[in-house]
Image (cartoon, rainbow, N blue to C red; front, side, top):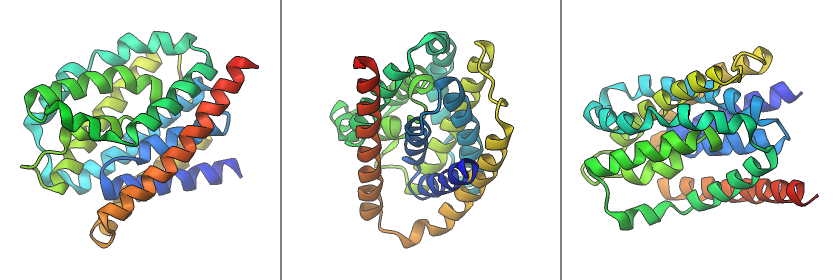
Length: 243
């Protein structure tokens, strides 16, 4: 039953990301931690599933990718996972749940980045650094770095495509960093395989549905889901630390 439910979650969150370019990864990692899954399993599993989801989204939106922007993003994103992964290995799971809950709450209102006015090269470098450092700890960072990709001179498809490749490469780096520090992304193939297949299918479905759903209503729904998950994770983490 757990495998079926998590597979459905991987499908649904991939559809969400396929439609909006963000949000699904944060919801999925929240769900994994909400089930009580240990970080040593949840984080590598999430990275593997999101690698599949973003790779599929990169393919279906392939002709819209902004490659020059990706180079700047990866310049600062690449070192982060290898610096942070050793800390994650030894971290208290309750602290990670609490931090993840607070992180999701903060990213539910990402308008703060607009005030920084970093939509050019500097913004992409900052986004890469944020993704590289925070990704191994909180899993999905799409909603956090999205404001730096929401440029007026890019179409919606270009934003989704470029973010998909950026996140795909980020998850690949996380898997490498986790593997180098004792995490095993293949430890639960019974979960990984069906969730990866579901995530790939979800990305394709999301691409086909993108034109039929109001972006405003869609973002409202994602935000509501994220807030509920964030509150549960923060409560669970705080209760564990105080218990």
